[in-house]
Image 1 (tube, helix red, strand yellow):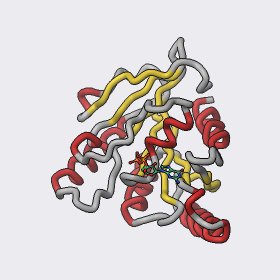
Image 2 (cartoon, protein in one colour):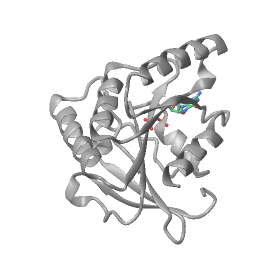
Image 3 (cartoon, protein in one colour):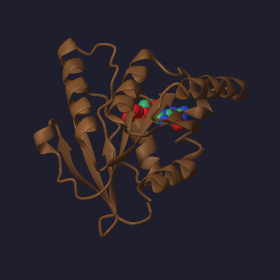
Image 4 (cartoon, helix red, strand yellow):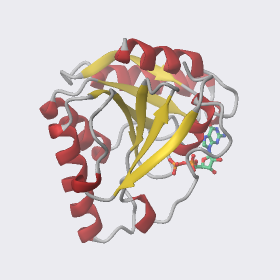
Length: 198
Ligand code: GDP
């Protein structure tokens, strides 16, 4: 599925710039610096499909990538959230953009919410989970940078994250643990995408 062509389609800074809902979409969300770009690149076997950029201004857009030729589905790189220094206005815009997209997008089949293994779920992640629950978009919680923590800590964060997932109606009960560094969990993540688009 990911061995075929993958191409950047467009960035949408607001809803009027969304591409036509021609095919199903899988969206990636997470706090800035969670490792989202690295994971997208690893998942698609591309070195710089998603740019590892942390400029707050540049990240307030939804980035769409076409997968397959003929077109099979789209990957959507959602703007990173939770910048420590983000002005209120940026956070507000982010909330509107993401909420509108999640609620109105029938072709959106699943979201992957990335969580840093070292930090676990933060309140801002819970807020995003709530947005997904409310929009009835099913999602997987994905732990990133697993290579950065000890096995015992990883087990602990997996357990805690799974406990929280159970309280969220749209969250998948299974936590996917990944590392873009070692490749851990990447095949499982690919399967989660395949399962979602059928
Ligand atoms: P984004 O802001 O969510 O797109 O995060 P990036 O993909 O740019 O990653 C943020 C930082 O974490 C970069 O310095 C990456 O090299 C590093 N990083 C990302 N994924 C991993 C991983 O799986 N393991 C390790 N050790 N570092 C990672």
